[in-house]
Image 1 (cartoon, chains in turn green, brown):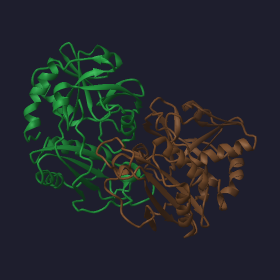
Image 2 (cartoon, chains in turn brown, cyan; image 1 turned 180 degrees about the horizontal axis):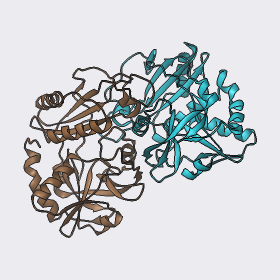
Image 3 (cartoon, helix red, strand yellow; image 1 turned 90 degrees about the vertical axis):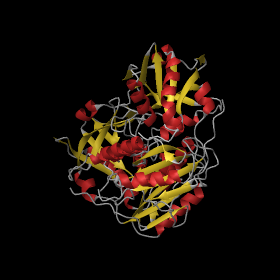
Image 4 (cartoon, helix red, strand yellow; image 1 turned 90 degrees about the horizontal axis):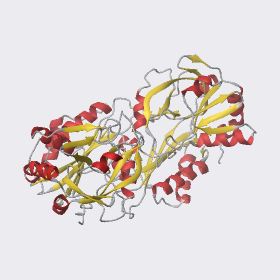
Length: 286
Length: 286
């Protein structure tokens, strides 16, 4: 399995709706004081846009960032998506340019919105069909309840974890937290199947509450599958009958090998892939 | 004690030596993939510049960021410092604009350098003389050995911790890690004195290795004071005879009250302040 290379550069970048540069005073740069969303767009439509906007709004609420009305953001994404066939849109929202020196925010900042559009297809049919090779990463994720779940801009852990991944035929690394619980991949959420039970790590101490994770939880529950968010450890991986990864861009990737142990994409993974397929190939919202 | 307000806005901002904006593709914005230094400048000279540049170089090495030669950076800071009397210079170094999508860096990025100069005095004589009121923060810092010690750009923890500090007569919050060890303030390092022993938390799992912390450790050792970096807990605070805070801008601030417990700036704190004074008031390097 070779991974589809991501388009290297965006064909369109807007800062607060204009093709301009960013203020060097922006608190996104200074502190990572902001959030982002990566939205897959198919046939000119932004997939799961309402879920992305909902997570963004929740993140802004937790960080007390006052974003422009949802309508403005939604229309910007829809317009960008409509301008091309398939694309990936990355939306960054920061608290805005600093109005004082130091970590504290004053409250009079005006949020910055950066939208970047990467044209081209983003799925990877071979990975979804055949599964991917995965290893365990050495980096341990810090635990912080105040940041857990948020797709915030403090991503050095992901950057460093990802840099461990040098072999080109390994698609992802699974990461544990500093206290030894299983969290996620470097850019994906993880699910395991044990007997007929579907499980995914709780993300109340670290990790990102992925949009595709949420969709899988919803669809599984809707199909009557028992699904559980819980504290998980290395042993849960060892005992897993199936393992799969999710993110908004790639949908569901079965894990076919974990640290040398062979797994084949199993019945539950296939069933969920089939359930999700109509939502992934066509332009679908929520 | 009222705190000296920081100057709100810089009078000079340079991006790679030019008064320009920042690329919205910069990995500093996207991931906090970079480092910073805050350098106090007195009478036109950058204080402890060699120590700041040394820490920056070590950080770049750990993150594998290839910065311009030290000479270029040093001359830029010196030129900025010389252009005014007292000032604070914030230098941000990032891995540069992304040359591909996603967390991984490619290796062909060109580092970005942002220098901001905040004019005006930065000390606080009343705080250094009378001491400051301090409380314990509720936020627990995540632990990650790969990031510990670095003055990196992932500072949402500090931003959120600082936002707990609403009472204007409290100068700083002391923070513990997720595993319950004492780490630092939100913007300072912490030292405690117990009997005649000087102690400060080890920072191998979280926290920033402050330049002023390093100077205090060096000066104390040079003066024959027993000094120890070790794992510290709440009980060490309770038993402390003296507590003080350090950072490159403020030097040494005695803690005169911690969570309602009165402390007076003690003999060790005063002795170290006296040792440091020549380095703080005059233009000194290294």
